[in-house]
Length: 109
Length: 112
Image (cartoon, rainbow over all chains, first blue to last red; front, side, top):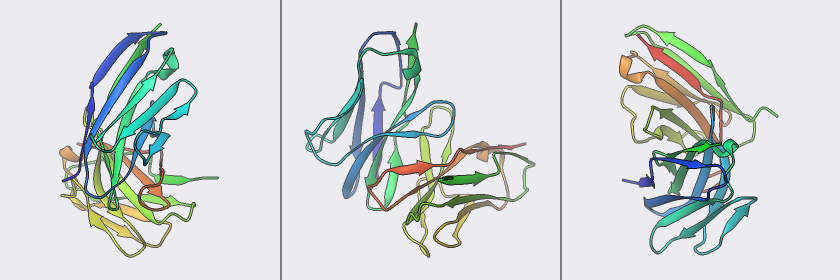
């Protein structure tokens, strides 16, 4: 069965810190790995990664995939209070999109 | 540009009642999904539909049925609601597998 494991489950840091969120996966016929941010309502898309070693960047957020070791990381530098959210990692295998439990990130001003 | 629309946004049911959650997307996407989200559990896949006319079970299908009515619409039915089905339900769609999935705003369902 497809599986996505995220760590840590919860993280509290001060504004300005850098954080690294982890995602490991086991999935049949891997197609892509996606990161989402969820604040109060629906998840919003951050990144999609399909190839190993290619870093995706968007402002202070970046992500990289290692298909050999079956994991991905999401980095956030110079964190701001607006980064407080649940970050969800997900995998497309065959036709299914499977999510991990998420990492709840809290940024203290 | 509506994207993915779910109805209703909130619902309270009594144990044993039935209801259907509606989902429609206007992006001509092939794949559609239903998830439930409980505290600390992330998003768990209930059912998905890779294309019009096909549906498959996900991780937690028991107690639910789905219908892919046409390419736009994918409904989720609870035949006999139970308190364990109290949750937030999300519908999502993607052009096809491995592409970005777009989410509806969710339905908060309480079964008493």
